[in-house]
Length: 203
Image 1 (tube, helix red, strand yellow):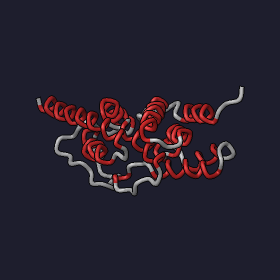
Image 2 (cartoon, rainbow, N blue to C red):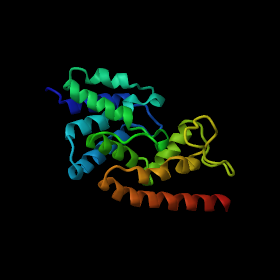
Image 3 (cartoon, rainbow, N blue to C red):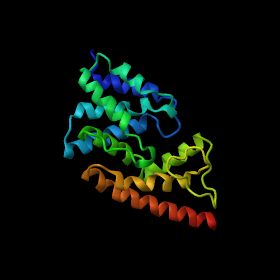
């Protein structure tokens, strides 16, 4: 049976993320795909481009051992060159990197970025934060340790500091109205969690 490009991309991403325990496993990829396609139902955009960018976005993540060239090699000959370039531009431009990056140029890019950011907040975002911290030997919490300034990748940090350093910023960075509505509730839940965490820590 001939595979669709979406099926091939899913298999490729599933294999790439098979041994990940940092919160960037294939379950994350699948949630981002579902979120992105759900947002697309209200916001528009080319669904195939959105789905492929969602499936492949973390294959280019350097901290996971990926590169944008790996994605480009996979796409070569499977989709038209213009579409491949569009997918690569989405993936290359969607990471947080301090939150000050230019807005993605297309609705497809903005939707996939929103989906990825939504999966970083709320209950799932909390779980992924602690999973990531454990994977990279960061403590849950260090009283008195200030959050890192934007762009600082070398100073000590903690799982709890990651909320102030990144996660609490994401609600205001959503591109689409659909994602903003979802982000409101997830952001509120995170603030409640951190408040309770710190109260319990002190007790």
